[in-house]
Length: 137
Image 1 (cartoon, rainbow, N blue to C red):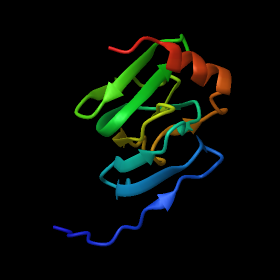
Image 2 (image 1 turned 120 degrees about the horizontal axis):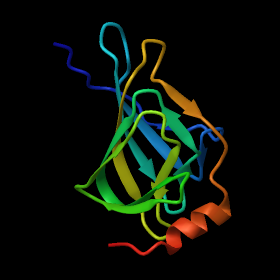
Image 3 (image 1 turned 180 degrees about the horizontal axis):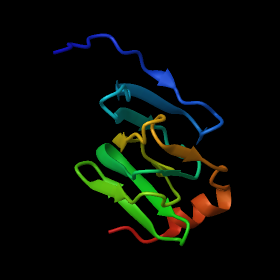
Image 4 (image 1 turned 90 degrees about the vertical axis):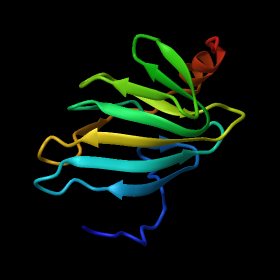
């Protein structure tokens, strides 16, 4: 057993996120384990860039209200307690709404050469505005 008591929160890199996002690592892939997990906190309007995961991703919302969008224009509005499963290879993004914070646990299984994430271009302001306009449930 390893009891981890001091893991610093870091500001997410601007080359992968728009706005103020903070990452708190929980698990880093290390052979033979391949799980990567982090608590990710998004300020209002903050979001990831487009990206995909070799083996998929699971997002469990812990606080606030957010959005998860895919290239085909599908957008879901997510709230604390909900989970979204993004399939392997699906290009997507996620972040807070423009008026609320959002935090989620992000979990991926690495592909043996890291966490298997392919980072792409930023979500444009127009794409984000269209996602905000999508009716929520």
